[in-house]
Image (cartoon, rainbow, N blue to C red):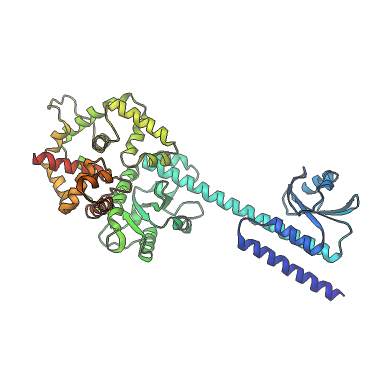
Length: 497
């Protein structure tokens, strides 16, 4: 008889484990209701899981008599508070058995009600089921904690990235006091922009995350704008210098990921001080545009001299200062948002800063009114972007300077600017250059450019993708290379007149 009871318990426990595995395979949480229903079928009792001393029912079988709970309130409060582990009582004609689950208060209580006292085998099965429910709840809680942790670490990494892109490494340190990422102690960084399938991004970021939520001396952040990009900031001493130096750390990891996944591509910036992370991002975006069609799908930024670096120093500073002077009386936030909007769409700026698109548009409108310019026009944006670059990279004009004032065309007509434009446009085939010119003339409207050229919109896009590849400039994703193309084509046009 005892052997029969043992066999019944073993079979019942095996059934309980099968039910738990079934719920686990289906996902969606611990499946407590399904386990309670299973216990009802096995032991012929109705069951409820009460989660606090007020009698809140988390889950119960369909026919559970809820009226038994009110008289049990004092008993349930003692059990929830850890004063009792188990209790047996009666409520009217029902036999009621209560078992507290788990080690921590307030403890949930398993309440079992039936017309008669359960058999010893049923009592054992009820206790085993209670233990399994406690483990399921603890596992579910651990899952929630894990997901919360991953969310918080992503938020912190994103905050550090945002501070660095704003040129404020000290702000990044203040935000991470007590858990400063090693990257912020580096002298220089290099930015890797990994293009991968959107479903792989979280896996990649988590796979190389250390216990502190960072990535050793690096930082991997899911791009908030482009769902197939991972932004990877690595200390420059981890990176190759382009001369065949052996790859180390996460640099090697990223190269291996691209090598093993034909749909991946990687753009790599040059080395930059921490406060110049925005420039590093722009370089990596340009490199990624070329990497998509490059052998091995990896490309380094080629190091082309920036237009601001070839313009007459004093005259360029004065032109930039004159253009931007009205912003001195505008909110700094508007100027900062304008600076970001020069290299990404307004919707992307809104996502990056956690603002509404209408708020971003309002700040840009304030800048437009101050400058008297239309920032939806690609040529106006190119001029403002050049002025912002000059104002941030050059010192103030020397006092007593009496050189005649220069217009932008005056600056672009210099021999060095002409040589810069010729070098930038040289790799383009004639048909791609015509498409690029028509696209700029159409204010980057591909459909309008297609109509003016008498070709399809898809052909325009194909030509632009080819131009991206040969120029090594991002034109269609973040659009960080459009300003250089606008100035280069304008220089070519005004010198031909």
